[in-house]
Amino acid sequence: MILIVVEHANGKASKSTYELVTAARGLHREGGVTALVLGSGVASVASGAALIADQVLVADSPELAQYDPEVWAAAVAQIATEGEAHTILIAGSRSGREYSPRVAVKLDAPLLEDVISLKDEGGVLQAEHYTFLARVTERIEAEGPMAIVTVKPGAFAAATPGSTASDQFDVDLILPKRRLTITGRTQEKSGRISLTEADIVVSGGRGVGSAEGFTQLVEGLANQLGAAIGATRAVVDADWRPYSEQVGQTGKTVQPKAYIAIGISGAVQHLSGMNKSKCIVAINKDAEAPIFKIADYGIVGDVKEIVPAIIQELRK
Ligand SMILES: Cc1cc2nc3c(=O)[nH]c(=O)nc-3n(C[C@H](O)[C@H](O)[C@H](O)COP(=O)(O)OP(=O)(O)OC[C@H]3O[C@@H](n4cnc5c(N)ncnc54)[C@H](O)[C@@H]3O)c2cc1C
Image (tube, rainbow, N blue to C red; front, side, top):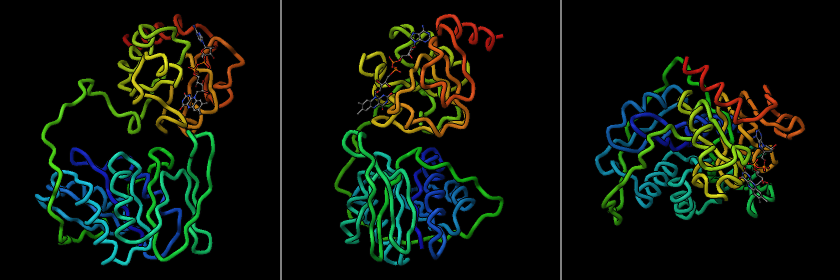
C-alpha cells in the first residue's frame, strides 16, 4: 500500500494532504492509498481523509495531542511495517521535514526529499527536486521494497474529495516516551490565511516602490479580497516584508485559484513558485515584462494608479 500521513490543523486536513493524494495516485502503484491520521480528537480529520483516500487508519490518543518528531516517526514506522507499505508520502512541511529522516532510519529505507515530481518507472521511484539554492533541478530515483518521500508543498495539485467515504480503522500504537515538551507558544498576530493554502494570493514586487507602497497596494488589495500575501525575493531582501512571504524557487511554491502579481518582473526563480496558479493577473508598467508571458490577464500601467482604483471599486 501507499501510506500518506495526514497533516491537519483545527480539525481539518491541510492542503498539503490533498497534494500528497495527487502525488500518490500518480504512481499507479498496487494497494491503493491509505491515509494515516495521528492526533487527539481527530474524528473530523479522519472523516475528511475518508473522502480522498481508499482507507483511513486513525490513531486517536491523548498521547498524540501534540506533535513530537520522535513519537510521529515511531508511529509512522510502526504502521508502515504492519501494513507492509511500499511507499510512504509525507508533506514537506517543517514538521514533515523534521520527522521523515527518522522514519527512513527506522525502516532502513531511502528518503526522496522535497520532491516536485514523482513517478514509478517499472518499480523504480523517479523524482525531481531543487538543489544548490534552487539553481539546479536534480533527478533522483530509488529502488527497493520501500521508500519514503517528502513532497514540496504546492508542487502538486490538490486532490478533489469524492462523495463516498472509504472505511476507517482505529489503530493502537506502542509509542515511545515523549522527551521534548513545548513550554510556550506565541502566535503571529496577523491571523491571515496561510500563503500555501489560500485560494487567492496577492503578491508584490519591487515595482511597488517601498515598504509603505507594499502595505498600501498589496496588503490593501489582499484585505479586500481576503487573500494571502506573497512577495518577490527583491522585496524580502530589501526588508520590506518577511522571508515567510517569499514566493519562488527559494521561497514557497503556491498554486492558488488566482495569483495577482503587482510590480513583479517575472524572473524564472519567481515564476517557478507560482506558474501553476489557475489564473494569473499581472500589473506592470513595462509591457515587455516576462510576467505577461504567463499571465492570463495583464494590465500595463502604473501600480500606484491601477491598484488603488481596483481597491476603490471593490470597496463599492
Ligand atoms: C538562486 C536564486 C534564487 C532566487 N529565488 C527567488 C525566489 O524564490 N523568488 C523570487 O521572487 N526571486 C528569486 N530570485 C530573484 C529573481 O531572480 C529576481 O531578481 C526577483 O524575482 C525580482 O523581483 P521583482 O520582480 O520584485 O523585481 P524586478 O525584477 O526589479 O521587477 C520590478 C518590476 O516592477 C515593474 N515596475 C516598476 N515600477 C512600477 C510601477 N510604478 N508600476 C508598475 N510596474 C512597475 C518593473 O517594470 C519591473 O518589471 C532568485 C535569484 C537567484 C539567483
